[in-house]
Length: 328
Ligand code: AHR
Image (cartoon, rainbow, N blue to C red):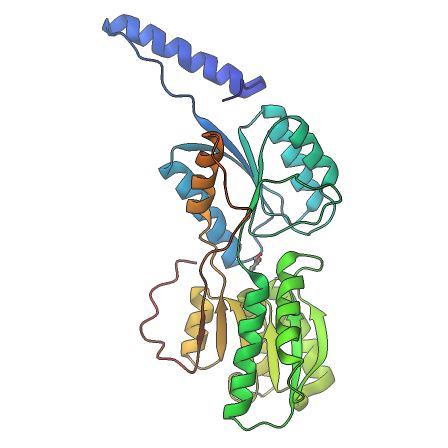
């Protein structure tokens, strides 16, 4: 492990001094403790139940794997994430992990981490850099596949309802983020082969409940009864949109097909209540893989470049009674 500087070093020195003094008092001979691994993690914000569950899982798993965690929340701002990564470099953490809010704009700070010899793990979302090899690996969902699952469900639903035309509105996640780009791409690649499908508008809801409601109001004002299906990139925005649909006099799940992504408890409950038709799973439980990958890197081992968790979908085609509590 590297030598730490500043506050951290002072703290370590004090602890060592205390243990020497205490060992002297008890007359016992102390064996030096294993140096702790210090992981700096920059979380992008707290915009959703998914994100809050993800942060909690990482904190819990760091504790159970005995890894010291320096956690910083960037409150939805890329500049805060860049500043946090710079602080991690200054502290000489052993490993840096971060969930990038958007894909572009990371080259400079990651070059600094590379020059400092600190490995970087991407959690949840991916990045685009001009220089190759700035990160070690990515631990996160296959967002493209999630979009495909959403599209495939809609095609099956249109078949079962014998629809000859499906007008879709799409509420997307944060612009230029990996889940926004890949969920859109996977969905479009899947439905574009079906001539019944038409996306009449795509609107940015930024993964937020309040924006989901605003976007839905706007879409209902514009298209009203013409909307056959709502494809929303996350549960938070879907949960914001549902009351707007009801307030406008429509029954979500019957008058409009509702497709969401994440699989949090509230959305699963709405699915069971018939207000949502399909929820594609995106698990926030990435902490265990993050800690195990950190340990492997510290032991000099090699890790896979991309690590996707297994994910599925839940829909009104299934028996939903057996879904265990979601935990987020
Ligand atoms: O990057 C994962 C996405 O970000 C989740 O779908 C969403 O809920 C979160 O805000």
